[in-house]
Image 1 (cartoon, one colour):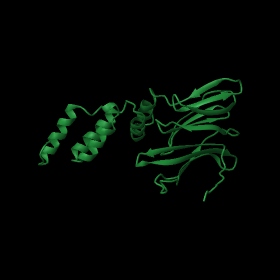
Image 2 (spheres, one colour):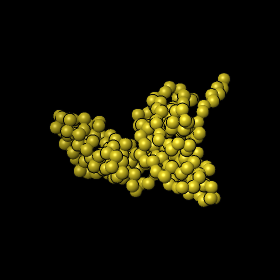
Image 3 (cartoon, rainbow, N blue to C red):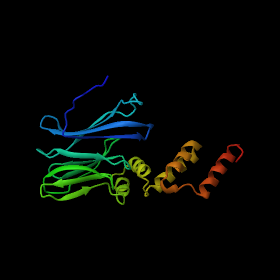
Image 4 (cartoon, rainbow, N blue to C red):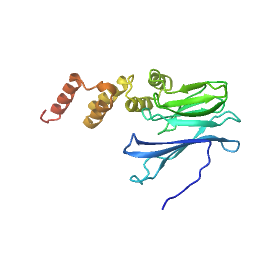
Length: 224
């Protein structure tokens, strides 16, 4: 039997993707609204759909400071970055992580009224139209997003997550730190995961392989 549920909101979008803790595809709904009673909200929620009927992603409702009278007109999720881009009627663009609800940036990008927007497949952001007939796009900046999150937001976990998902550089030191921590405490599995997740095969080098061989030998095992 089909089930129809009506939900209130100004704009919404869906994405089917795995998560940092779930290799199976999760169907995620992102819904945004702004009302005088509740204020600005963004809901991030996994939907139980076949074949994955169990829920493994926690539901989040994030407070967002939309200006009074403003409201979201379009939102989309970048398949590469797993980031939600929101555009409001009065030209504010918001970038948010869909797994944690962390707001990365909120910025006024135009003073004109924005009518609508849709996924810009080239970048994973939004392609928008304003009341002057102009077309513009807002998208995650591959060159600046990792340094901003790592150095200004000081959120290394989010920087690693986005870099791994979007295959971006700039986090080699963070993966190197995970590798060192794993080897130091003898957690070979953690060290291997750091090597596998590091973008551009940054840690898959002979020097690191030799360290694994030495670590295994020191634990009394036979090196391959």
